[in-house]
Length: 114
Image (cartoon, rainbow, N blue to C red; front, side, top):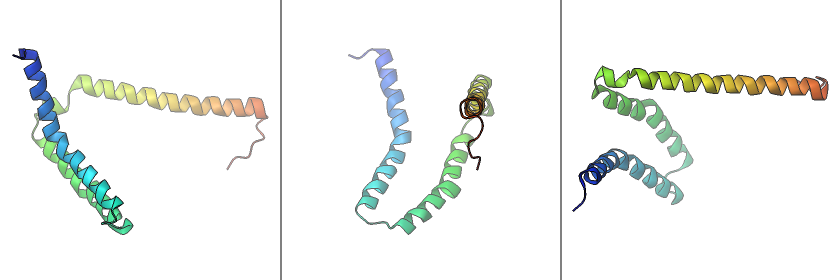
């Protein structure tokens, strides 16, 4: 007989698969149909526009509308996201600055700027 924690983990896993499964199934079907030539390149552009402009916003709205505002605006999550974003932005700026400095030091700043 499985323990209580194993049963809870299985229920959580099945719940997550119930949510994400149809998404992965749609991706797999799209891949198979495209490889078999069922959809043309022009069709894929229409599907892409539909997905980005209608389907994903509707999915997000549906998911967020079923949650309490406290779950959506979780302070710890927002703080972690803000700090992570800030670190990535500082890293990009640092790399850009170091690359510019190395260009001036090593190349005398004579490299073409486009």
